[in-house]
Length: 314
Image 1 (cartoon, rainbow, N blue to C red):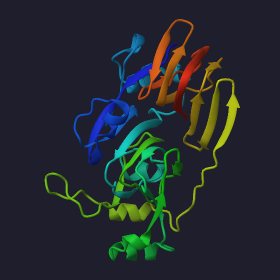
Image 2 (cartoon, helix red, strand yellow):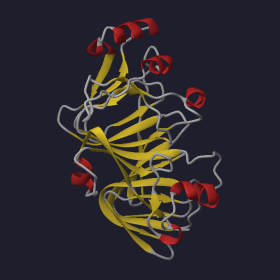
Image 3 (cartoon, rainbow, N blue to C red):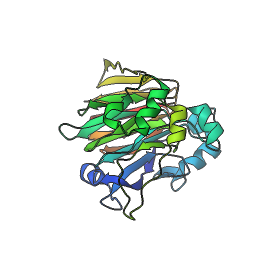
Image 4 (cartoon, one colour):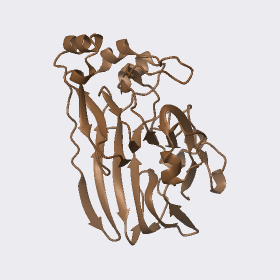
């Protein structure tokens, strides 16, 4: 088996910019490109394999027809989705449903728990994470009265910060943030507030107040991240989160890391530096902005160089 390198899919957004081109060298469609769907089998943005015997096939095709690559993982759909988000301006304040609500109200879609690694941000950048309402009645009143500054919790951020955002959590990226997001494979978002701004065609984007009120956790529940770092030959590995839906780690490689066996397939994104991935048969160059999957039981391989990667697994 060999690594599966993937072709990103780009999405234009009202809040997007040009950081995906400036930081990673991607060929983006416009100066309002907000999202890079880097590892995705979701119908709204499917990646094609760039190399090897599966070149030109979608990740969804491989999940359907080649389960040996994924250890015959349970589940009808590929479980995770990796994105890079360029929030040139503020994202809408939003919330995602959990699995049961999404299955019932969104035609069988998955719920959406996600997490953010702050790749870069402007000085003074913030995110919205949670709210100050003490009851559902107070939450509804504050929304109806447009008391957004009283309601929303704002948190300053810096590069290297990590946030775990379970479903039912009010959240938004603030202007001037570049983020790698790991999430359940879902595209369900309930907008709570969009700063009364209009799209280029002059129309305002749809809000989903009723559904948001159905799912928001009240009062807000903290979800602190307690990273654990350990050193192994050639790398420092930091585990950010181990949840029901995914485990996410940062690998800072400074020499050569040798892996004898994978017990689960892994999603990998190179966020800095460069190096090589060497298998028994071939050596693959790795550089900033590459995204790939390490299949289940790929066999012995090694990664060498000076590079930083975010790895996740279901």
